[in-house]
Structures are given as structure tokens and as C-alpha cells.
Length: 160
Image (cartoon, rainbow, N blue to C red; front, side, top):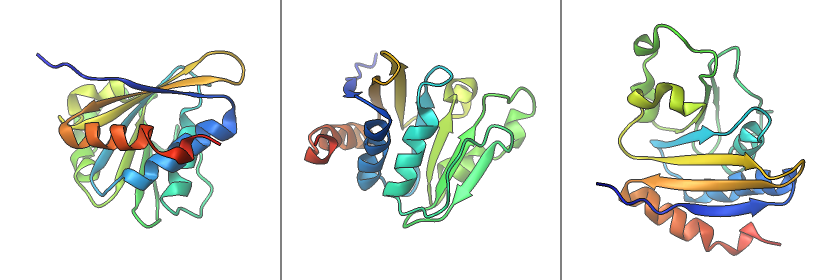
């Protein structure tokens, strides 16, 4: 039986949601997988945009809803997936090439492909508290992700 600690932060606005992603990027290495969850409009793409900035991506990052996967080059490549509209042919998409590849993989709506996720990953759930504020919860699956969460939560760059 697993006993996972959940780490939480409150983002007061869009900028803080983006900063949360940007600061997290400092702790990520190739083959990192982030399962990004939250209702429509919760801020998943905003978080991913911050993550991209933290990884040194210069391109504009937007939701890959209709393209499924977008790849961005930074100090570490970012593979941004949105599997919301995925219904068939999941096993044919080569997820493992991304999950165990040279980049950081962010999967929006990851619960849809949960059976294809690696055993070790970081689940990030974003919940609306009101129009501006978001609760961002981090659930690490694996020791390396637990270490990342502990160091990340203690990072003074998360607060002004």
C-alpha cells in the first residue's frame, strides 16, 4: 500500500500559477513526466507555459488540444500533450518514447491515459478556488519526485 504525501500551494493569480510552473522547471531532468489535471479553465496551460519558460523555451506555448502533442526546444525539450479528445488508438501513439525520452513530458488530462503512464511521475492537480486563486496540489509517485516536491515547496522563489 502506498502512502503519498500531497504538497499544496495557493496561487493568488495567473502570474503566480505561471511562476509555480517556472520554478518547478528548475528541479526537472530529462525523462520527467508530469500528469496535469484540473477542470476546464483551471489553469493547466498557464502552468505549462510557466514550466516552458523555466525550461528556456522561447516559443509561445498554447494548448495542444487539436494536435495532441507539441514539442518545444529549451535547455531540456518540453513535450506538451493534451489527451482530452483522445478516444481510440491510444496504444499506437508511442507514449513511452516521450516518457522515457530526452525531455520533460507534460500531459494535460493525464487520467485519460493513466494505464500508459510510467510508474514514477508527478501528478499536478489545479483547482479553482475563485476567479483568480488556484490550489495547486503535487502528488509524487516515486522517491525522486518526492525529493523534487520537498525542495520545490521550500524554494523561496515561489513567494514574493
